[in-house]
Image (cartoon, rainbow, N blue to C red):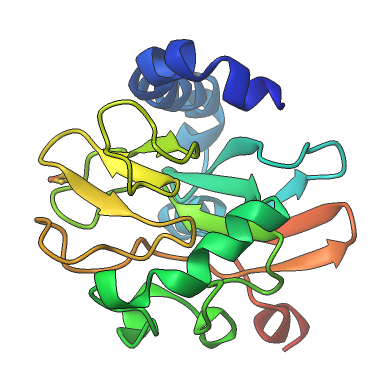
Length: 200
Ligand code: FES
């Protein structure tokens, strides 16, 4: 079992704080540099892609990065997690990811990803912008026996599966957003550009 799963309770308590503190730390460290930049340079820096080392991620683990000042989650799904995606279709509002603004074309599939193992999502609820909790365990406490793992937004109760697809009858009406990204190698991701954009 991954550390991410073992320490779920503590992480849930910390998730919001980490995002806020991380943002403040980044802003403070960044400010002297930013203040010396002209507006177009600031815009370019804010839009810069982020390179992420995923080579040491364990099956079932989630890590968090920041891109465009937004939390970005990378989840390494286990085969069991991937299997849950196939039988949820009737319960989902947009199982085929038909809302084009919510993902690049390469993620318009059941897994919402380039390959089924790694999921990359913007960690912001599509209802009113809270940060959902990662609740990967089937039947997780408080979410009912039919829960097969996914993301739960405690603000108003929205639920998303392990591909970030939103369930029916919850306040959020769109799937979680997938940012542009591609694999630089087996162990490295680049978030913020598609492969086509990077090579254009
Ligand atoms: S902000 Fe997530 S359910 Fe309202």
